[in-house]
Image (cartoon, rainbow, N blue to C red):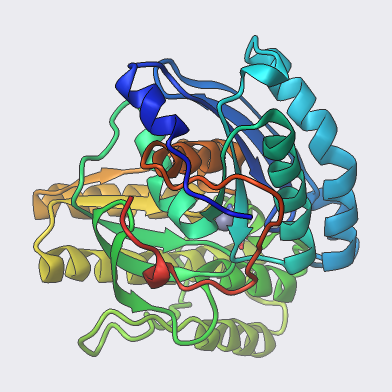
Length: 354
Ligand code: KG4
Ligand code: ZN
């Protein structure tokens, strides 16, 4: 049975702060956090499965689900304790309901809903990409609405015009590989293993300009779509042609330049097209320092500001889920009762306003 709850409205009216537990299990990180609407983030922790999946060169869904089962409850205990709370002090529970790996999502959804049910507090299923795009609002220089969001993760590459919570207009997205996927696949080609993004960034720091220059996909035409699958082929061709002559570090450098230039230029065009002055960057690739400095420089020239979450909140984490969950719960969008839902696919545009 589901029913919208007035409880959080009462709390708002009474001026009482809400403490929301956030649980993220959509992919290969178990993230847990407690967000307090008055005091801010009280505690957050992450258990990364990266080492476990590294042997397989990528995320193995079944292993991911099992590891979430092992980690989630102990992490909740630790985080609630670190926040100085007892479990009964929680006023709501948020969990990632999609998009993501179904088995992994179900672990967080099952735990989140049963915990909320047993505590008699509302629960809310959070959209993973909404959580990413609201993450910069956890920082001291929280961006005001409206803004353009550049969402760059392992599964998504999107430019979104954000008028407010749940008021999203897709400006452009990748027609093939997501940018994080391009980092991961290119890293594999270079023998760097998984996850590719941080490894390519580290290797690129040892490289520099050479005769190699990769294409900047789709910059020669109007529109805000991206395409990254060709870039991976270019890397492969360069590797074969060079026959070991070119340093892998220079290839990594040239790849990172091509990706960053493309994302920076499309972001500049998106700001102009939407008539916005703020750019918000979120998702794992947003941790990349070359991309961050390129976007800073572009924003400076365009008279815009750019907002990033701290690198730990660019990649998957519980804090963003607790925060996005609080936003939805405070708007009375929590549900109560048994039963839960998770969605492997869930278009951002289907969300309504808070
Ligand atoms: O947001 P995220 O943690 O998970 C998803 O929702 O997908 O993003 C993970 C992606 C991976 O493809 C990873 O290689 C990439 O973000 N990534 C990076 C960096 N750190 C993580 N890409 C480039 N540079 C980084 N420093
Ligand atoms: Zn993510």
